[in-house]
Length: 275
View 1 (spheres, rainbow, N blue to C red):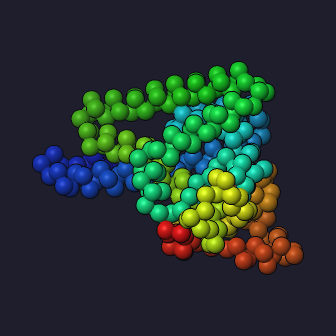
View 2 (cartoon, rainbow, N blue to C red):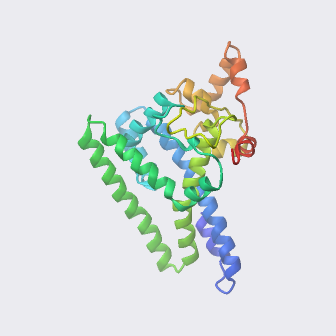
View 3 (cartoon, one colour):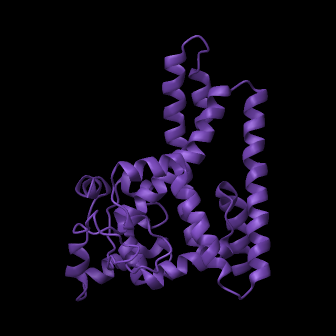
């Protein structure tokens, strides 16, 4: 839908306008991909369907295909994040980095995504259980993702939507990785973090935040990520029940602690910028 709308406004004789429209489309598509990928995380906790087999198949077919990732491979990496949050052994570590110019450059150029994939593959390969199944899933998902994205680009090419082709490439290769890494950093990086400290060798310490229910909070932090603190407290609880869990915990001894971690994505972004 975004691509159709954007293509309707593209005028071949106005290059500046075309660049602006393509860039806006890339940002929005990247944001939407980041929104959808958060449900992949929900599938990692077996919360898409009651049946685990169909849960994984649907996750791979409908979501994993966007980023060439298999749910079984991701689940191993993500569970380590729960186990090792705040330590040097965490596998999801964008919050180790300062929200500075380097963070933006590495995110938008795809360097950070390649680094993450390299670390993820090494971690998964270190796990001997179900090695063949994991390997098969990894390569099949990469193949399906390539076919999916190439099919989109070829379709746009034959429709002569060259600016939208560029927008799609930017969305997948730049804006989605940026939004994904930024969300995780905001959820876990401490206000007291120091950009001079290398948290890959010095433990950062555990920290998770809880956000509100505004349109921004629920879209940027879709699939319950806006209640990320609660997810780390009870990983098996579906995002559809986190508001109820929050209401319950407010009446317990944890209420004050939870209230103290309430934040907004924008406010934390400003606070952590270049820190």
